Each structure stands twice: as C-alpha cells, then as structure tokens.
Length: 340
Image (cartoon, rainbow, N blue to C red; front, side, top):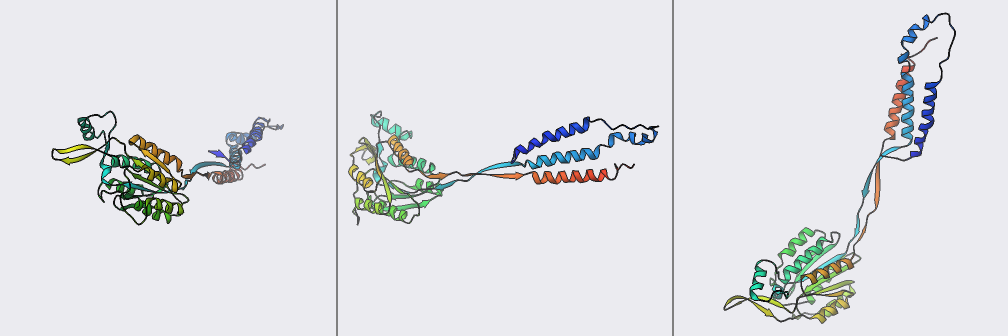
C-alpha cells in the first residue's frame, strides 16, 4: 500500500498532542455543600467518554483518508514492431548427405554414428537450427518455402509458430525432386514479402548445392528483384568437403563419398545484390553460429511501457469516518445528553 500524499500523515502529530492535552488537563473544581446530588452522574463516569472516543476516531480516520491510501498494481504492455521473415530451405536429394567430422575415419564408425543418432543429415540439422531460430523470435511473422526443382510454399508469414513448426517437420529431402533451383524460391518468397506492411523484410536461404534448374530468371536477377522490393537476403551454404551419402549398391546400402557441388560465388552475389550477408556452414556448429548472427543482426523493436492501476481506499475511509461521527453525535445528544 502507498499514499498519494504521505506528508499529510504529519497531521497526526498535532492530533496526538491535542488528545494528550485533553486527557491530561485537570478537571474543573467547584465548592458544593454536598456531593450527593452528583452520585448518579459519578456512577456513569466510565461511559461518559464514548461520544468523545467516536469523535476522536472519526478525526483520525479523516486524516488517514486525506493521505489517500491506495493499493497499486503494476501493468506492463508489450508493443512489438516485428520483422517479416521468409525461410527458404533446400529439399534436394543431396540434403540427405552426412557431413562427417574428422574423428570418424571408418565406415563402421560412420554407420554407428548414424544409427545412434549421433550424426544427422544436412536437412535434419538445418531443421533443428531453424526451429531454434523460430522459437527465439515470437514477435515476428515467419514463413517457409521448400525448394528443389521448383518452389513449394509451406507457410505464409505467420505468428502461429506452432503451425509453422509443424509444417517444417513435414519437409523431407527429395519430396519435390532432386534438382536445385535457387531463383524460384527467391521469387516466391519476395512475392510474399512484397505484400507485407512490415518495416523490415528478410529472406534466409539455405542450400547445399549449385543452381541446376533453368528458370525464366536467374538467381542473380531474382536477388536484384528482391533489392527493388526492399527484401534483404541472407544466404547460408550448407556442407563440407567430407560428405557421405547412403546409397543402394549390389552389396546393399553403403555410404559413398560425394564430391562437392557448392556454388559459393553465387550465394555471395545473391546476398551482396540484396544488401544481405553470406554464411558458410560446414557443420551444425557453423550453421548454429550463422543463425545466431542473423538473429542478432535482425533485431525486433519491443517497447515495454509501464503503468500502475490504483485501488483508492480514501472514499471508503471517509464514509466510515462520517458514519462514526454521526453515531457519536447521536449518542452525545441522546443517551449521553447532560442536563443542568
């Protein structure tokens, strides 16, 4: 509880001083022949002070009410100026590959690491880091595009991140082809973002291969189109030179090393043309660092204005003081009325 005017509580000092004076002052003395006529009044001496006590209580309550006691409840209002983000994820067949760390040197070790879930393929790692990224940005509208031979709009920009994560989980490598067409997802995502009224619009594109699908526009032209629509593109190249793919052979499923098909120059140009940034993610640690950096660069503006709601007790206390005052007045002029 707080007081709007706590300094008014200082009125209790003269109030208490007055009570002390009235209690300590000597009673007036008169000389009478006999005290017998006052016997009845003396027998009621202890109860004669009730109206005075009520008047005193009412005055104390009024002083307390003047200080305006109140109980405050602090409220915080969040106002978020979010960013609209589209995530474009490569779903080509090469996203099933495993980027093998240097501590794994034999096929047996590789097989055991995959079977024990100690090593995940590129798409699984990408989905895991994207999931973390989405969770860290609750105030942003985020959409999702999968691409291979063509683009697949998995989700428009939305604040329903639970639904978005469910759609992310459904994406699998090879479901829309084995090629890698980079221009189509850029154009599709930019088309979605161009309709946005957000002050900041961003596309994050993840791929592990070079563009090998012919489209009406090239990836570089698509990046320039993104620039005209004020969409910044962050490109993330996934994969290392020590990559293996599980393939069916005459001897059964075998891990086969694959050669890199990574077009680092293209991803760098796409980012540069659209005022974005290029990242190289050799493994999960690299992808995690890239996503953390993007998360820091694209800050969501959040305001937290505070206000306090008060419950005022002064009106109730004043009403109580008036009721006590009225009762005291009625008693003083009825039961405790003194006649000469």
